[in-house]
Image (cartoon, rainbow, N blue to C red; front, top):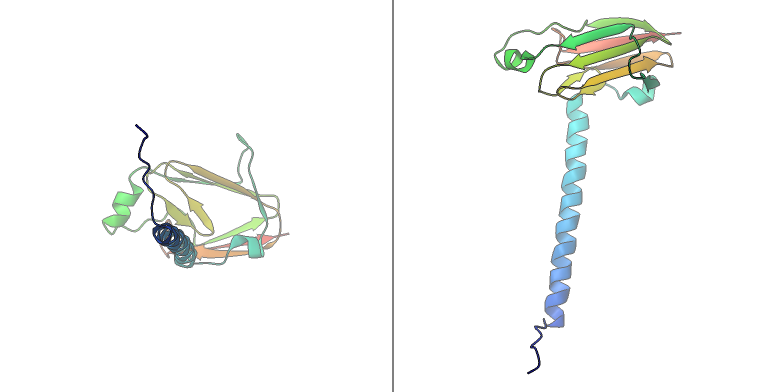
Length: 148
C-alpha cells in the first residue's frame, strides 16, 4: 500500500505564505516602534552625537565612580528621592566614569543605560556635553561637561 501524502491547495499555500510574511512584517514594525519609544523615553541627547567615549578595560581605575546600592528601585517606587549622581559633572578628556549597579533593576544614568547587577565604565575621549535623564539624581537629570 502506498502512503497517502497530504497536499494543500496552491491558493492555501500562497495564503499561508502571505500570513507568515504579514506576521514577520508586523513583528519588525513592532520592534522598530519599541526601539523608537525606548530611545525617546530615555531622554537626553545621544552621547555619540556630542562626545566620543571608549569602554574602560577590566580592572582600570575610574576617575569618577558611583555605586547604585541593592534596593534602590524599591526606594524609588516608594517615592523616596535618590541622590547618588550629581546634577552636573565637569570632566576632562581622558578622565573616566564607572557606574556600578548592585540593584536588580535597570536605570538610566544620563546617557548611560545601566542594566541590573552590571557595571558601565567609559573614558571620555572628545570634549562636549552630555545631557540626559537620570534616575539616580534628585533633579532627574544630569549634565556632563567634558572639557579638553
